[in-house]
Image (cartoon, rainbow, N blue to C red; front, side, top):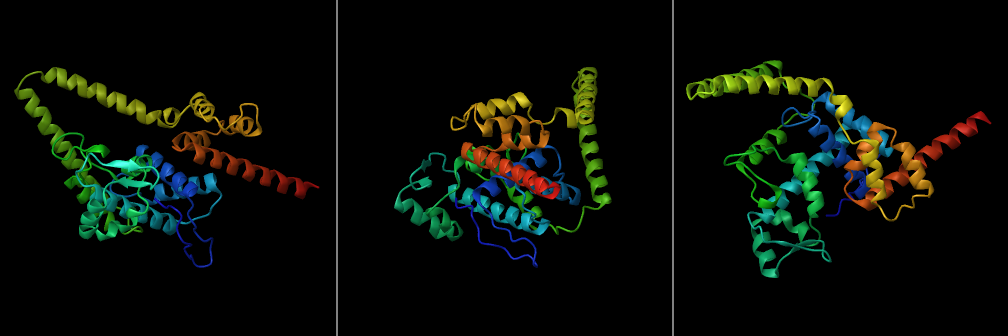
Length: 303
């Protein structure tokens, strides 16, 4: 899919122009934030957006604001929904590497686009399976079991995804969820958990279930208290990812620079999150150039 978009005016501030590298970094940061629990409902809250903006600026040197990042989020989600609708429940579709889209007959395309005209752009270039998996992690919210169970390979978009998407579409980005709504949700969850416990007690094994619940609570509390220490890849993992890139010479400047860069937890986390090797290289080069520019500016001021 062509990720480079036209420039977006922003009241005299920096213009947002999205290259493939910037989109990959933005998506990687979104996935990181979501998996860290910073998207409590159907959208990021104000605190999460501020953190996402700060991390994006730090990683790219681009000072895009919340509106610009939100616009990119919305555009990616629309493309993702149209792509899922285009594929439908057809699991035997292949990928044409030359055309960079679904490997299907002209008849198939004509039939599909007649029903889904918004997917016409994917006739020339679709969403690569690797990038589709990233978008799934950003926009997919379903139960693990039951009628709404879903994996990216199934091709069927279940009802829960549609419901969550509608909620997110109706979001006012400047309005936070009311505390009363959160309290109601918590009470409903507590009520559900209480009913589950009562049913288990009726059929026996109540003590075992209670013990398992206690152990689970303790594990969650420990994980929560140590979250900042355990979240993210280690330096060893980042170096292993670096060694897996054949184009980077272990004795070269980029490699040596990367070993120092990985001392920063956020930097190595972002590096490991990037899926494409060419994007990893481009990002490392950008980081090196940014640091050299800062050092040159400091040298100029001193002398």
